[in-house]
Image 1: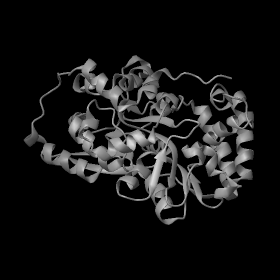
Image 2: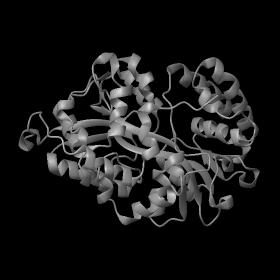
Image 3: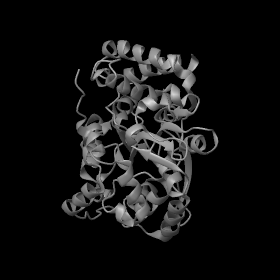
Image 4: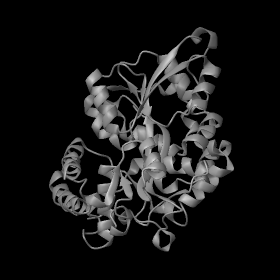
Length: 384
């Protein structure tokens, strides 16, 4: 079975700083046709945001408030399941912006809990066009227009303590999480570490090539593949010390919990590295998992003008670039990396050496049935 092409994440193969800068020259500037913002009229206003727990650094929040007078009520989350469950429970009420990942469109569409953006009020030309295309292609529900805008992109790969571990040959592998040599000193997020265990299993002949991507085709294709993966992971579960579900747990694992190597997002270990800790993050030989987290408006959003002011600020290259220095991820905003520090550029080059950017694995679009079946096997692993 061959790996499917995710048209809506074409940018994954071009996620380099050079590609972003080239895109900026081509895209040009877009003028707002929406109403002019008057600061004094919104001096005491607020916006309620449900977003990944480390995406809005204190400096970004303060700078936004200083410029607009709008106070951000920030609720941090650690998974797409948290966002969807909270929106289902509240029937789309309580928040002005939520932050689903690019591959979740098939999950969100049938729920009818989001409203389309007024694109006349969005400076969409300021972001990488391949990433903005995700919204128009995969999040145009019922022909009403894009229900999703790109906000932050990154990858999931391998991180390790440079003073305690070194990958064989200098290039890490997802297999290190399960290796007997690292028993009791590894970590990962259950559902993604199991998927990536499958990618590793393909390289050692435990699964057919392309089996993990073929599992997205149907439940009939998925079950035999994930049963093999679950059995393989359960047999090696004793080697895994820590299961994480948010950025802080990843950081604590590497600094305080005795983890020497683990599967992580790029942001947390790179933030530690930038702070001078002996930590490295790098794309593994099997390829990093690439994602774009976005912004969406729930049907119950109350603060419409504030929403578009937040988007305008988030798409300003200067605050977007300065935030990179703190959260450690990457921005789709064209030219944002020009406002990031030299340390970010060094970290980026070291995280994606050689052909690593050409070898990214975009998370495929996830149908509701896929998530349910995956949860079934993840629960078997967790309870084993």
